[in-house]
Image (cartoon, rainbow, N blue to C red; front, top):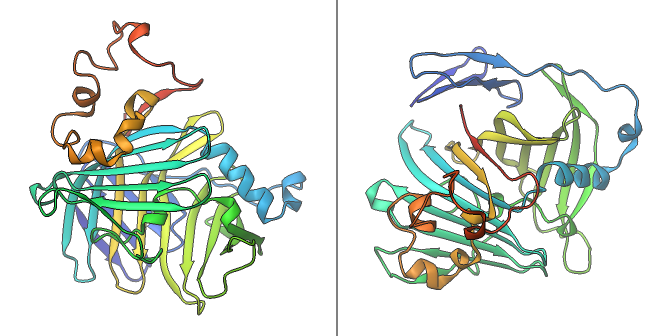
Length: 340
């Protein structure tokens, strides 16, 4: 991958193995059309101006964020194969391949598991993040080369980054609405696309705003209610990092996903880009036993493909696989191969 900065245009061009994405400093202008490695095709979003008056025009911050969650966070079982590219302020880059598993239980508990496959120095390293139904978080990391045990991240600050990336553990999961006060501010327009702007302030168990913590500013597309950008501010109101989603794809009905996620750390000058190479919506790929210390410390997550680990006798994508051998998926289960 090569990265070039065009100072006069204030834009980044990120060239990935399968395509190109160009976006302005607003992070909201263009998406990538995947092509062959030698082909660079840049396609703009469908431009959308301010929406005509409708009911949503008068919605408050809570109503807007409820619609965001309802449209785009509705599927509880997701598996992804990802490429992560880390770049420091000097331009040095580190490329990692990893798998991401996510599962939402019936009681509202949210579970995330990241497993690093390459390079060999990080192979088998795993991050397990669980947000219980009562809001209590349980984050831990597995470092097979060092301890061979799961180590708790309890006591780490919410804004602290994990494993050298520019992402915090809390950035991996959708926000829990009950943990924030949402305030709608003035709508904005970037590159002829209209956005709702909503500030998210953390609250304590009593529902009162926590003044000692920073806040987030969300930019939500008015045409799709997709949260395209989040600015993170510290408790003094200083911008510390920005997360933007790119290469937006419609998955099913009103549900959209971004196939690239960029976290820009304004404090350190570093950046982390995550590209989703493959995405599967199926509970077969995220069985509950995976999100346990026993499963990780037995090193069942190291080596082989996802299909071979979970389905040793037959591939889950095999049309001949009997219906009796797999659990039924909720309506709308599907597989998306990015770029195809």
